[in-house]
Every structure is written in structure tokens, then in C-alpha cells.
Length: 307
Image (cartoon, rainbow, N blue to C red; front, side, top):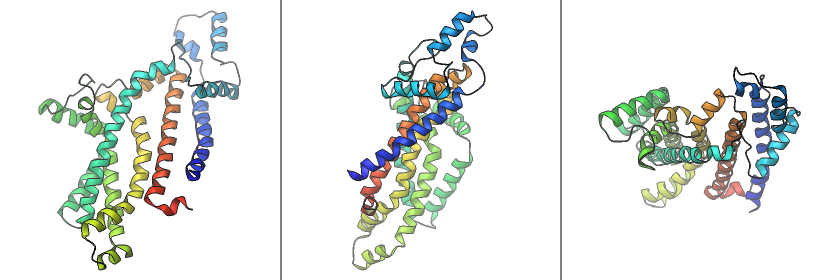
């Protein structure tokens, strides 16, 4: 419990500093979002002043950030310049992106760790060479190329997956975009697992366990693989936030109404509250993911929580 509380306390300044930097970068940009909302139409000065006062645009940046954080701690992410609640705007879209990210994350975890174990146990063999070559190819190809290719071949030509939209719900509608989104992370998970497992199989404790006559399956599964998963857990924990934030291209290819699509539209419309609200939620996810990773460290290696 003390270990968990320490990590939680360390996360508080990270959250405050990160959200402040994001807020500053969005609202310190030149231009008036109220005038941008009106477009080419003239707006009376009284209306502009009322709108700026309502959204605290006339206040110093620190005061604006203080009002925003006060709302965040009350569960309110603010409202758009058209008067719509940011939380309500992101409600349905957040569920779409979360389901897509979970699908991609499970794909990375299951397939990536599986390929890494196979390659690590058969180091130098055909399986190892195939995994290394395949993951190198996936890393080298841009995600939009993988997305359009998978959509045409697996969706249109073979008819194995839906090609767009969320009509068939989770997980059917999210399988193909999830595999596309998770393909890049899968390559790194497989390589990390393979490298770490090869290193641990050479360790002294593995030779000692072998000399004692323990079965190969027990040595690999209970000892070597457990220690090998520490760097993999680190990557998977951080990558979940990356999957949530990096779904813009995938959502565009497969026409998924998620937060990535909403952020792209909000940037075009200069809707700063929406952009800041989305990033704030993503920061929370990163912090929670890192906290979970720290706690898993203590489970996988008891020496860490005693440090």
C-alpha cells in the first residue's frame, strides 16, 4: 500500500504540469476563437465582450487555467464555444475510441507476446527469422498504407471483416481497425519479448534450474518468461495511451466516429476546449497506465517494491 501511495503522489504534479503545458499551447496561440466562430459575419462588440467574459478569455492565462482545473476536479471538462458540454460531446465518441484501443491492445498482447516467445525459444531458426523479418516490415510501412491495404484485401476482396463503421458492434466492427492500429505496437512487443527471453534463458538461475532437473516448460513459463515480461509490461502500459491518442488515422480510414475524428474537426474549427478536454483525459489514462505498470513491477519483481 505504501508503494502504491508513493506512486500516486508522484503522479499529481505530473498531471498538473502536463495539463498546464497543453492548456498553454492551445490557448496562447494567436487569434480570437470567438471571431473564428463567427466566420466572415460581423459581430457586435458587446456580444464579443460577453462571450469572452463567459469563457474567461479576458483573464490572464493562469487564471483561465485555474478555472479549467476547478471544473476538471468537479468532473466538468468545460464547454465548447457553441455552448455544448465537452463531456457530452465526447461521451459516445470516447466509447468508440476506447473499444478500438482495447481491441488493438489485446491484439498486441496476445499475438506479440506469442510471437516473441516462439522466436526466443527458437533463436536462429526459421521461426525467429520470420518474426524478425515480419516485424521489421510492419515497422517500416506507414499505418495508412497498412490500413488501406487491409481494408481492400481482407474487407472488400475476401469479405472477412466489415470495412467501415460500427454497425455490427464490438468486437466485430473493431477487429480489422484494431489489428491495423495495433500492428506497429505488436512488432515492438514481439521484439522486446524475444530479446528479453533470449537474455534470461542465458542467465545463471536458468542454468541452475536446469541442473536441478526442472522441466523445460516450468523453467520457461515460471521463471524466464516472468522476468522477461518486465520490459514488455512497461511498453504495453505506455502504449495503451498511445493507442488512444494515435487512432486519428485509423478512425479516418475505417470511418469510426471516435475522439480522434472529433479532435481533427475541433482543430479545424479552433475549438480549444475540446482539444484540451481530450488531451486531459489522455493524460489521465497515461498516468493510470503508468501507475498500473509500477504496481505490476512490484508483482513481477518483489525487489522493486522493497527499494
